[in-house]
Length: 200
Image (cartoon, helix red, strand yellow):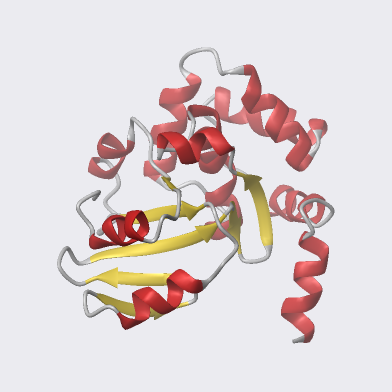
């Protein structure tokens, strides 16, 4: 994955980045028959969208819309994020500066990503997500996970979600997800983002 021309371009343009990946990814892909093609999620430490123009003009990439491209050489989808991880207008994680230095999300951030991204994007956990979360929850979680999750969806919802996943109960009701989304509207400027997306 790291052989993509994208990373050479980012280094040339001096744009710090971090890759959204974890230690159990490879194993999780093997047990998920609904998942056919690995993609790469990359968070850039910049608000500037200049890189979009650079990639659109590069012969090595097909533009797929939004902030997504296809690496022609490796036939891999590349999804770009800017400073934060989000699904639509729901920003749920501001990436720490250290992750850009290390070029990989911290373990705590990656666990948060696996807890929230599938629910916001798919309203469910697919087998690959369940596999990863079960692995991480098999040992004591870093305290930072609870702190971040409490600040993101509130302690009450955080306790429910963490307890369910800890007990390998991945059945999350749509009502719970809707409440989480409502809670998310009131952090990270998400409410303003929602209004902009609906009015403009």
